[in-house]
Image (cartoon, rainbow over all chains, first blue to last red; front, side, top):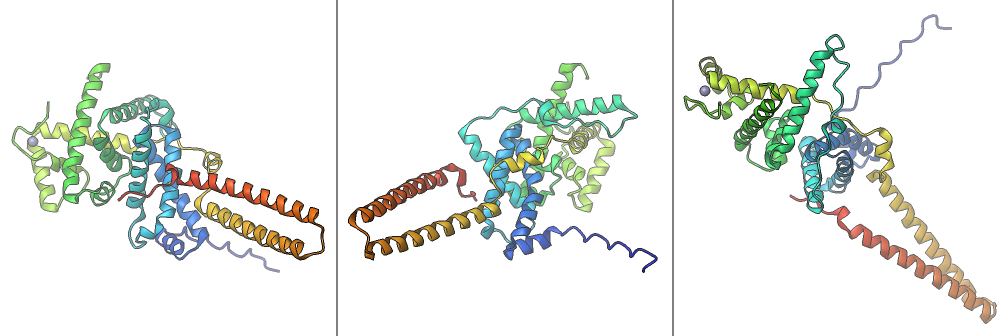
Length: 199
Length: 147
Ligand SMILES: [Zn+2]
């Protein structure tokens, strides 16, 4: 009888996206399910940020995953998946937008309460959450082109190269477009701050 | 206020600097300019604070069951499609065999008419359901992804 318990084998490493991609494209249905699971959070968040509506975002995310799967033959598995996924989500949202203009929901139903991370400073956290809400609402006032480039950069942290891919524009124009959107955003925020007397 | 730089500096470079997307030389130029230009510094601080605010923002996400309440995922949808396909082939083969048996068998005319009539009804029902389904699939839910 063994006196010492055998060491628990380390959990297998989380399969990397590349490994999953290869398996999925080799026809492994389980790999597809896992891959789509990984994609769905990103798809949902991007759709939510574009539309401002949780219900529409869930529909668009589901539809986007379906399209991703149906059009997998057009994708080169050697390339990163994220820009392709975001591009599909963008198209899906644009398609549904043509059918009916959607209203952005109140910030409270869209933004998660940021609390819990600094319980020692509840006042500061409340203020930061207020700033997050203000940025979110200012985003809703921008035109669609400014909004989407800001979302991709600020909420998804996409490098310029991937932003160019999602939006279908040359990499060289990303910086100037992004900066114009940021300057516009800054103007909106200054106006809002004056409105609530923060200035 | 800081709509543009009083010294004519290309302010788009401020964004490139913030995002770490500039070459070393360009990045150095921005750094030097920020030291001497209050207008650009103010704008830079503002876009940086928006970026930091956005990065710390969290969004409400659907619960697990909201994902599964919706139409099944593509892989299970494919499985279901295969299942229906095989079931239909099986039903067709079986009724074909039954028809042949009855047609060539010793049963009287009444029994034959009963069997043929019943099966024709079932087939017509099946065709109408199939046509409805095809109509649904052709509606806008499944359009091509645009370029
Ligand atoms: Zn300047």
